[in-house]
Amino acid sequence: MAFELPSLPFAYNALANRGMCQETLELHHDKHHQAYVTALNGFVESKPELQGKSLEEIILMVKGKPDMAPVFNNAGQHWNHILFWQNLAPKGGEIPHALSRKLVEDFGTIEKFKADFKAAAASQFGSGWAWLVLGSDGKLKVTKTANGSNPLAEGQGKVLLGLDVWEHSYYLDFRNRRPDYITNYLDKLANYEFAEAQLQSA
Image 1 (cartoon, helix red, strand yellow):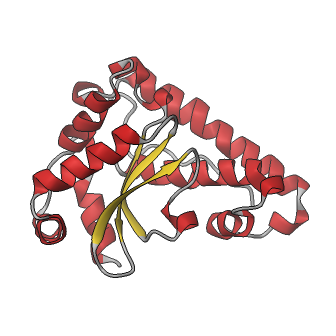
Image 2 (cartoon, one colour):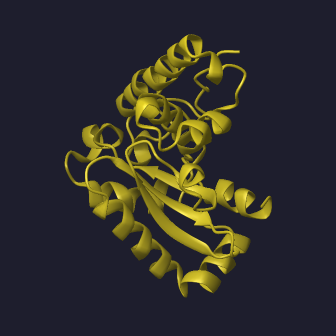
Image 3 (tube, rainbow, N blue to C red):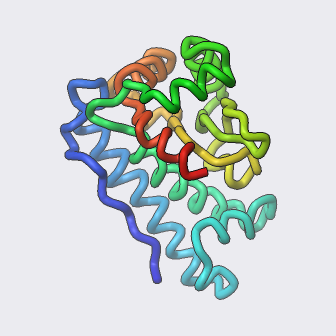
């Protein structure tokens, strides 16, 4: 069974008045994410050892193997983007009660969580991701990963939120102002209801 590009959970223009224009979503989803899926399916087709494996199994199987780096990068990016589309919402930015309580418990304040997340996302050199994860110790923490890696591959915990800081995710809307993109995400686009559901299902 070939991997497939998931549909966006909202219309292409649904985030335009929240800082992510239709052209950004069309390019990011239809071109960039589709390219990762297409490349991954090509690798699976040519490598019998990958066939019949889930996306998560492939990521963990090829992690750290230099000869499998292209497989890891494309599988990781497919996994990351599946989460990313769910992390965005037309009415994002509102933090529901249970998640708010947990953020305050583990970070001290909501402002401290946002500051930590902004610092991680802004300081990721080059391409990569910033994450809010629930660690194995039951505590929320902010992490970051380079390129196509993710908390699954690095054993950081269960993902609640993930922000793509590759330039193609923000350049049309924010040019080179990555910090503004991050702030806009946290305040206007982040699907905290999805994050709370992830927390409650852990």
